[in-house]
Structure formats: C-alpha cells, structure tokens
Length: 166
Image (cartoon, rainbow, N blue to C red; front, side):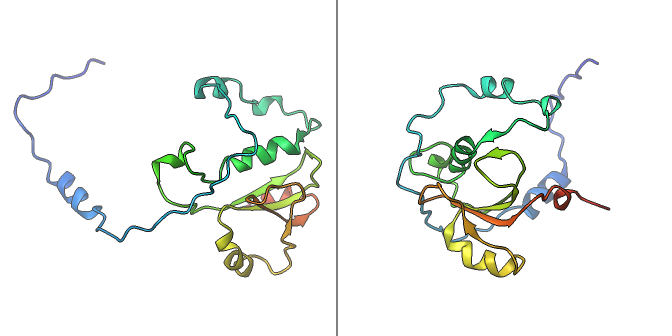
C-alpha cells in the first residue's frame, strides 16, 4: 500500500490524552542503587557487535542432545547479568536487580543436571528461601565468584518440571 498524506490540520484524539493521564507515574523517592565494584571475571568484554553475536547464535535446530556447554562459559554468562559500576547497560543507572533466575541445567560439563537459582541480589536470598519449596537445597555452586549467587536447588533430571501442562 501507499501511505496517506498527513493532514495539515491537527486531529484531537481525546483517548490518547486519557491514556497518557491514566498511565502517568507519580513522582516517587529515588532509591540509591548498589552495584558491584569488582570487574567481571573475564577482563575484556567481547568486541563483537550485537548483530554479529545474534548471527552466530546457536540455533535450536542444531541441538544434538549430546553436546555439553562448558561450566566456565555458563558462569561467565551469568556474571554478565549482575549490575556493575561503569558496565553497560548498568551504567545507565536503571536501578538494582528486580528479577532472579531459575535455570534448568541439562548438559553443562562440570555441573550436575538439576534446577538452579541465580540470586542477582544476595539481600533477597532469605526471602527467596522462605518463598520457595522447603526441600530445596540452596547449595552454592562450587567455582563461582564471590559475587555470583548461583545455587543448586534440586539435583537430577528436571526436564519434566519445566514443561507447562494445561
């Protein structure tokens, strides 16, 4: 199709103003953020641009049900989710972590299969432990940095636990 020419006169749409008013956030007090001061374990960030990384992704059609991923690469990836001073994108000062991760591990060399949790702010650990299943182990994964709160919750094959049924 061909785009229509814009009208030279203003068309007032009251619903847009109503939506803007209804979704306006009231001013709230600033909450200071606390980011990690230490650098990432691997000193240099990859020099690849986002487009190159995306184009080199591992396609789900290539999964062979045998190949394992090295534990060191998984831990480096998880480290990148922790806010650090002067590190993109956290240098924009969006605030601290508000989401913690559950990770289903199946084929990572050096790491037992199971359900893991990445606690991105250790101040939330106590509350998470109270909210999660009481039988979870909460064993810190060996070989992680001091700043990485990565915990084994339940060992074993948890593939069925990750399937939504409806």
